[in-house]
Amino acid sequence: MKNFAYPVDQLKESIFATMTQLSIDHNAINLSQGFPDFDGPKFIFEYAKEAMHKGFNQYAPSPGVMGLRQSISDNFMNFYDLSYDPQFEITVTNGATEGIFSTVLALINPGDEVIIFEPFYDSYIAAIKLAGGIPVPVTLHTPNFNWDVKELEKSFTHKTKLVIFNSPHNPTGKVFDIQEISLLADLTKKYDTYIISDEVYEHLTFDNIEHIPMAKIKGMKARTITISSTGKTFGLTGWKVGWTSSSKKITHAIRMVHQFNTFSVAHPLQIAMEKALQNLDDYLVEFKSIYKSKRKLFINGIVACGYKPYIPNGTYFVMCPIETHTSLNDIDYCMELIKTKKVAAIPTSAFYLKSCDGEKYIRFCFAKKDTTLNAALNNFRNNNL
Image (cartoon, rainbow, N blue to C red; front, side, top):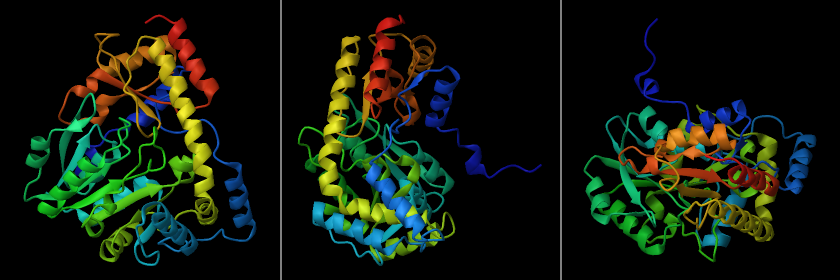
């Protein structure tokens, strides 16, 4: 039979699926894939049930339920003083991942260059390659996961079409500050590029650190595609309700791809999230408190086991150096953890294209029940590696 499409032959199974399956195979505690092992707020379930009983069970409008788009627009204004027209500038997508794919496919032609920051979320690379684009990695360097300014500017060329930026950042937990964001904004304006700002962890920051949307920077709203979702904020990653927000012109291009991809997102879940987002202010107080407690529990425990993790300022991930524990690379060490400690983590080399730094770290997810985190920490303490 004839070959598959060339871009598909370049893709590999996601490291998240791989490590989750290995954790199942070895009966290990899964601290690898980024999802909670507990349900989101029960009040949202009631909203979804009500929507189903009221008959919202057929196709939703392709751009998304207008009420949900209005709630998203209202939150942009309430939290960031940003104005988006729900009619023409917001599109509901099948999670943030589909939003990324639809945006990349709408913007990128074969041969266009796309700047990404490593370590990166792996779906960025898949989207770029499927569109025929060329990923151009810029490394974030420890201990603060900063870019080298000269390396960053050198990565921009006349072929640069798009930058993909993520803050709060997965997998490092870094929250970029106003100086860093402004510098990147200046470069995108100088070289006339679009920028995807992946802000799915926008509401999960710690220690009084505030998330700054890229679109908030002067002159950036017109060229920025902000992507976020309800999955991380409400702990309902399986519902896959995300969105893109951008100018009318860019949004139209994204919708042209979206309509022939997923077409629309589950109707009753959109109705439920419309109401959930209206209660976001009250919900976030408890949400942040819960994850601050989990961060403290896991980091204190892993430090007691002799590790020296990087303390995340946002997200629910912890990057942890392994050089003081092993001469193995990250992949082999993660395999050893699964077999001997019965704990699954992510080998971070999967998030790098250029640097070998990823071989020195592993990533844990602390979005788990306290009992799960304590069980994993007990495994570290009680099993020798």
